[in-house]
Image 1 (cartoon, each protein chain N blue to C red):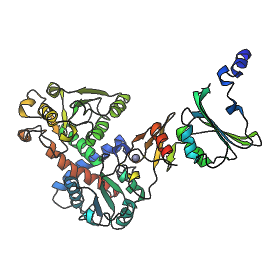
Image 2 (image 1 turned 45 degrees about the horizontal axis):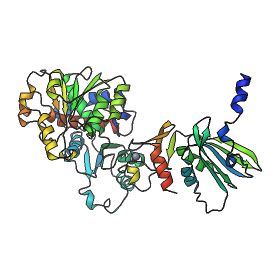
Image 3 (image 1 turned 120 degrees about the vertical axis):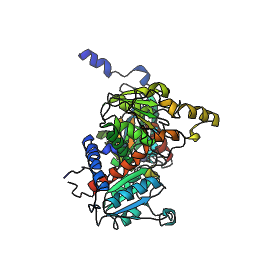
Length: 311
Length: 172
Ligand SMILES: [Zn+2]
């Protein structure tokens, strides 16, 4: 039986590389459950409580789908702003109540470190589904899973992260995680939105090569994976500054001339117009595959944390 | 070797006229080797305003062989506690503490910055859970000892010594 050393999933940093691979391997096996003839009863009788203190329909549906695919059920707070939470109940008190109703808690919270705090007070495992500008480990795992599924490996790939690298938390987490497997990371961003120095320094200290550039078109032919993120208008001093950047970093068909045939374009979604809709039909688009991988990865995590026999 | 040693024992000339520092106290605490400029933060930590009536001597930015410059505080008729020492460690990680009884050094302690700091200072990050939730204690791991640099175990944000000094001065 495979298992994790951690009782909760709070941060990718808590997982060993071996544990990451354990999750990805199990996620791969979960595909046969979805496509299998009989519904799974792996988590039958188990209850997931989803506590979303800020809306994230995509993540929430993905967890609920994963739980249902394994035969488990979900309870949820319909409108958290109308519940006792809005009347000033502490997160700890809410968790200490809900852990009597469920076998696992999935928490999305606007404050950084909330998931760890919840895990400290909870009787049942806690899965971090995003805490403020902080961590969102299942997103990173599904990104890795998508890359591995498509490329057949995680090692020795030329991977670029593109867009708002300064504020985008998915990019920070992915940068640390993917360089456990690769030697270098390409970073393409508008001036002022570069990857934080702290992260660049950490990666370099680990002996990784960090190549920072603003030249998307020039670097594209070298890439196996392009991970695009949203560039938010609010990050720019004037609308004109934003318009300038938007044009340069938009991916359209013309831009993809001469790229490698195995190029994968990922995006954590929702996108605005970083990726032209015409890309959706090309073999490079992976962002909808990511959503499917998200369900598989969450199925794997739920079954590992609930310690059911997945063999 | 021995001649060298003798030389270093002799105090430098500019230190000589400072009567304040050499004056002995009968009983109390001498906090020496405070990071230069941080003695007011130390007083704040000790809750000393001067209105308590005790005799307090402070020397700021005096020459120190070990630190270059340092601050010194003498507090008469008060022995500081272990808890206070833990807090002082954050703003004066190299300080030494002498408890004086009857004009003699009774106990000599060097401050040690612990590996973990729990509940003494707030996290620098306003959207950290520790700044928004009741009943939670701040919790840091010490990533650097001089100057003291803390990493919040919840949000992972780094708090610098400047921030700690500012905060300890602001909250008596
Ligand atoms: Zn914090």
